[in-house]
Length: 113
Length: 110
Image (cartoon, each protein chain N blue to C red):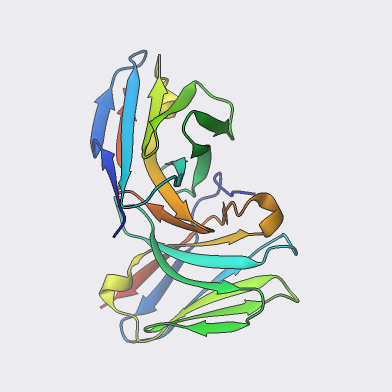
């Protein structure tokens, strides 16, 4: 379910390094996964998505990896920039739930110059 | 292209006062619409969703209500606000599973 009661874990990285943000999901029937980026005071923005028939998908500077065996999802950001500082949320859905997204608790990424 | 408008951006209301937050979507027909709440430094909590005019599903019992008087309009209301209603309220619409969020309303109940 939604981890709305948890404080956000924080990942701190140096500018230029690669970032890896992890997400564990609980529903083995989930077949669609999505990552959102939320900057302070703004609504979440879509970054990248992946379906369960894939284990990797690449975008611009971002890669999403899906390991269905251990129910783990990760977002990799290459050459992290100060503008990447934000809270990142993963979300999952499965067909039988009417395509309703269930959000993870979020991870705060802080980029040090 | 589709856009979502949500207002106001910030709102300060006294305890016991009513609330009305409005959200409209442009560029799409019969969207699924959602209201989420986010406490400071926390995750997203789904409050209501709607698959059509007059059709509202509530996910969490509370003193808030939602209405959808028109296809692309979604309203979040309360008759009497509580301190615990403070938070960041987000409207969203969806295409298939993908959600698109509005800019949010920061509500402070004092």
